[in-house]
Length: 101
Image (tube, rainbow, N blue to C red):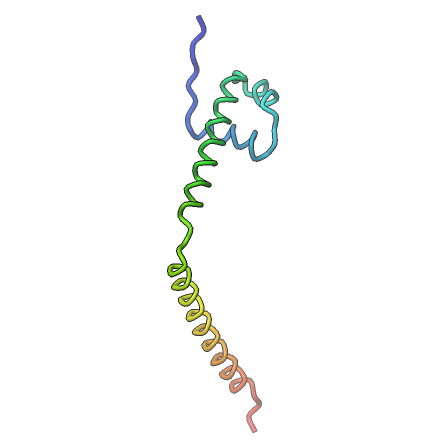
């Protein structure tokens, strides 16, 4: 009988990212790391399933019109405040860099 190996979740994720994100072939990774091909297929399937679920969840959390408007107005206020600070700093820099007469 063969003994079933156990792999840590971090290792599994590392291997799957090599396959999915880096484009390595399952066959090559299987041979290189001595992990059964079927096992890697299952890991990749689960990883892709989790990615798809996360994308669907993000899609379902889209902002409503009022939430978007509030966020837009808050960002606009922040930009205006920053622009005012920049203008003040420019004026101060101009004053301090003028030659004394």
